[in-house]
Image (tube, rainbow, N blue to C red):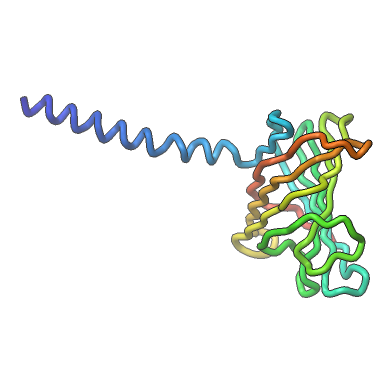
Length: 168
């Protein structure tokens, strides 16, 4: 009888551990992955390019590009003028060449080297762990897309987590 109780206890613990780990696996599996209208695309690298002060405002322009084998996402991000890299925060879309405050972005993307979309509504959330070239960025998009005619063309959602190549 004791052995049966030990076996049941072991199976119960194993079951609880398994149930706990499945959601963690799903979270990790979604990193570096973006869904465009329900189709998943992996992101293999990211790059940010510093363009400096924008229109004499208290904002610097950084172009962020996230790339995978069949997708390229381009975001024009605006950060405080004392930063030359992305800073943590929630960036909201703005369709203007004169963005203020600094938590704005604009963007577009291409899928399969032929389908081009504009990002017209949504947010980009950035968190940063570490600093300099070793910083690890977590970049989460939840945005609405239009096609080249301005018609709603779906959504892009996903997360990239990793380092970004920095170009000045």
